[in-house]
Length: 410
Image: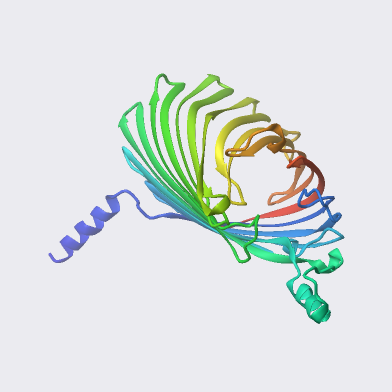
C-alpha cells in the first residue's frame, strides 16, 4: 500500500506539462581582412590602415513555455598597420549581454543588460617633453615653450566602458489594447578624460498605450522623459520630455508602414562664463516613418527616418535627423547581395546657423556566399562622408571576411 501514493505522485508528475527548459549553446568565429583610407573619418587624416579583425561570440540560451533568457559574450580582436594606425586599432574589445523575458496570459515582462569595453586614441600635449624643455631653458625661460609639433603632441589611449540596461512591462488591458511601461539607462566612462571623451549617463522612462483598430492596423499614444548628465567642464545637465502618437498598418501582404509624430521639449543647464549656470531650451518636432517591402521570398527592402534628441560622445545633447535604408536580394540559394545607406544631420541644442550642422553619409554594398553548411564568406565596400564644424572628411573601406557558425547543442 505504501507504493500506491508513490505511484500516484509519479503519474501526476508525468501528466503535468513539461516545464524543463530547452537549452541551446551557439557561437561564431569570424576573421576579416580590410583596408581603410581613413579609419576614423577625420579631417586631419594620418593615412591609410590595413589589417585584420577576429570576432568571437558565444551565446547560451534557455526557453520554457513562458520564459526565455540568453547570455552572450564576445570580443573583437584587431591588429592593424599602416601610416594611419593608432593604438586603439590594436586591442581586444570585449562585450557581454543578457536578456530575460516572461510571457504571461496578460502580462509580459522583460529586462536586458549590456557591457562593452573599447579602446580609443586621442591626441594630448606631451607633458614630459614640455617640462623637459622648461628645465633646459632654466633661468632663461620666458614663459613660451617652442617645440616641433611631433614633440609637443603625443598619442594617448583611453578605454571606453559602456554599461546599459533596460526593463519593460506590457499589460493587456483588453484583447485589443496594451499598456507598456519601460525604462532604460546607459553609463559611459573613460580611463582618460579629455574634451571629447566625457563621462556621461542617460536614463529614460516611457509609457505607451497601444490599441488595435483592425486586424491590420494599430494606433498608439506615448510619452518619454529622458535625463542626461555629463561630467565635463560645463557640468551639463539635460532633461527632455516628448509626447506623440503612432500609427502602424500593413497596406498589403508585402508592405508595412509605421508612422510616429510628436513634439519634444529639451532643457540644458550648464556652467557658462564666470562660473554662472546658464539654461538653454529647445522645442522640436519628434517622430519618424519606417516601413518594409517584401515582394517575394528573395527580395526585401526596409527604410526609416526619424527626428530625435540624443546624447553625443562629448557630453552634449544634439538634435539628430536621420534617414536610412537597406536592400537585401538573394542571388541564388547560397549567395546574397545587400546595400545599406544612411544620412544623418545633427546640431547641438541651442546652436544656430547652418554652419553648426554636422552631416554623416554612409553607403556600402556587401556580397555574401555560403560555401559550406556553416561557412559564409563576404566581400564589401563602405564609403563615408562626414562634415564637422564646416570641415569635410572622406573614408573608403574594403573588407573580405569568413565566418564559421557553431551549434554545440541542441
